[in-house]
Length: 371
Image (cartoon, rainbow, N blue to C red; front, side, top):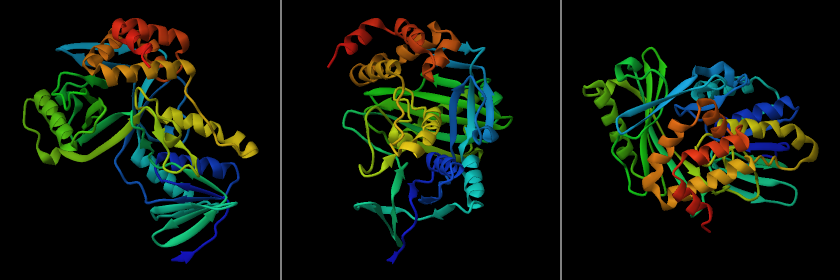
């Protein structure tokens, strides 16, 4: 194994978090080494926004909408917003673009090797890959965290289709269609669909619950939904690519206690929704103060959001049978602006109160007082 001693700052993980953090630190004048294989997964990242999309995200926006819908028991509910838009970003093109632009910087060093182990030393951290050995004074870790024992899970399997959204009767994002087969009894399954272009549609089958299911189960649910909507068998050739993932919903454990976690590993994901991009952006805003204090950037969602999420997750753990009604009633009873502001943690007490008044009261009150 070759030995190398390289600078002060390194980042493990070359996904969205690692690349955006690299760009931010370089703009702050730092020399950065990014360690990890290139992330070539197809990936679409969505969020609600009321302000201008920051760069470089803005350059990779696919579509944005000011209305969205849910489906349950054959009924359709459409929410519209005057202040918020639901935005889809091509994360794969953004990752490729960031890799290219960062490679032009003299302050950037790219190591496309998988990290095998970390060894803490007195004033540095030793990093071992399969080929080399490195040492850095500050080490950020953006790798996916581990789930705690009581952590809920969001699992999804998506298909990118060379199919017109109109063929599937999709005119705006379908956030949740509950009229599908259920993948497990300890959670809730739904289909999420996005009209990404004239002949491009993303369909994801998603499971919220405590245990993972076989990806093939979710693929079959997504396929059944597509064929039911199109009233024809889906040819394999129309599925251009797939994406799948597991997102912790609740308490997480960083892969190493000797690094500075960042991104999802540092709590960027909103536990009750699985959305993470806005959280990552808030973490990036804390980098400039970190440069002065060298204290780890510690972003947290608001106390109101954390309280509401904790109740939501307790209901999901202990009373999963009502989760369809929880989401459906929120979609029916809450104004689109309040709904979006609540989900992106900009709604404050008004958003939390509106959500609390919309959902089934008995179960939520019971879980609020449950230890």
